[in-house]
Amino acid sequence: MTSPLLKSFCLATAMMLAWAEAATWELEKGQAPVDNPLKGLVPYMNPRADRFPHSMEFFYIPLSEVVIGPGKCNWAGLDRRLDDIASRGHQAVFRFYLEYPGKSDGIPPYLIAAGLEVHPYLNTNTSPFPPDQVITPDYENPDLRKALTEFIGALGERYDGDPRIGFITAGLLGTWGEWHTYPREELFASKKVQREVMDAYTAAFRTTPILLRYPAGKDHETLASNSSRAFGYHDDSFAWATLDTGREEDDWFFLPTLRRAGPQAVERWKTHPIGGEIRPEAWGVVFDAEPPEKVQDFDRCVRETHVSWLMDSGLFEKKPTPERKARALEAVRRMGYEFRVGSVTLHGRKLEVTVHNQGIAPFYHPWRASLLILGPDGREIGGEIRTAHALTGILPGQSRVWEFDLPAAPSGDSKILLRVANPLPKGKAVGFANRSQNAHREGWLSL
Image 1 (spheres, one colour):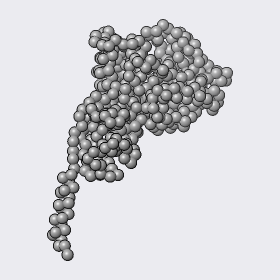
Image 2 (tube, rainbow, N blue to C red; image 1 turned 120 degrees about the horizontal axis):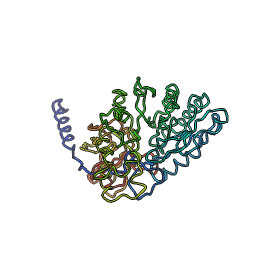
Image 3 (cartoon, rainbow, N blue to C red; image 1 turned 180 degrees about the vertical axis):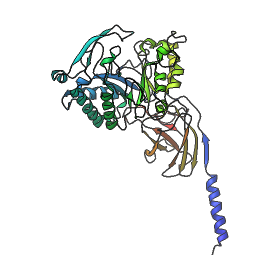
Image 4 (cartoon, one colour; image 1 turned 180 degrees about the horizontal axis):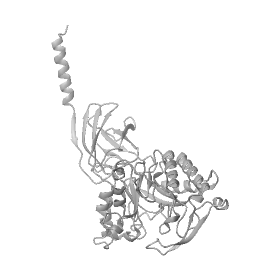
């Protein structure tokens, strides 16, 4: 018969031996890919592939192409664009519009036939491009308002969480869908109409991020308050009208506007994305060693806005010089998230992985982590292990420890791999800033 003392001794010895088998190591730092998904520069759809690395493509689409009658939608054109972009392994960013300088196709014709009043005029707010004709609808028209809210509801029902979509800018209201009709500000939608549109988006979308053009607090003169709503923002004059200059005439710039909207708007980037477009006057030249005087410091704009993605044509319409491209690669890498695995601990079947966010923004999509064990011959053992761990919620400068229970303790010759997969079939997985990224299998980090 074994004494209780001997039993305790044996148990303690077994525990000490088990703990002695635990191993912890640090992964070497590396450089994350500049075309990591859901961040970086975004060209208009179907760009030249050799211009600049990217993971998303942008397009405008007229509302009339989808809304073809009261309560009737034809999604063929939208699906065609999404499928085309997805075929290149990219996610889409898009915006619906009713009015666009130089275009007359935004308003569904059935609304005009039913009596919707429209206001054609020469829009002079088109710099650096020439003034052009624009057609602004009567946003207070009840038929138009009903069409907008019904369309948003149908859009969300069909596309919320669609892996082909990265982000949607709210659009619909104002010139280019940018929620203003400057210089004809009297033609813009009332706060009541703006609230109806925002309410519709809130009800229709729970997964796919929606971004508004302008932050607005309760005391804004023309914009309905959105500082407490679950939207991101997009700065469409990035690096031109982003930073606070302190001049009264520049109080419409993005960061002064954001701060006037209140602390909830200022902190919005922690839960909802910031995007936008580099201002046309700054296309390309923003990445030069000495950009023009009116171009604002790109790195500072990125740091202060916590921007994740920016539409751009400067590096895609014409092939950039090697010097401009090199500076752009370094600058764009600093946008959005950047994850690195620090320490890894293996103790039998227990695996702990410490993930650091060394970027300037979090990851906003609920993509899940997976593990893979490769045997000494490189073959998979047991297949992909899907987990509940996600990158969402890890703020810049923060770390999170992921704990995994492996199906069996791996042998000394086995390899353990980690990835956060892109739900788009051809989409790239999230690349970590470690040297062992893609070491043994493309898209996977070797732990």
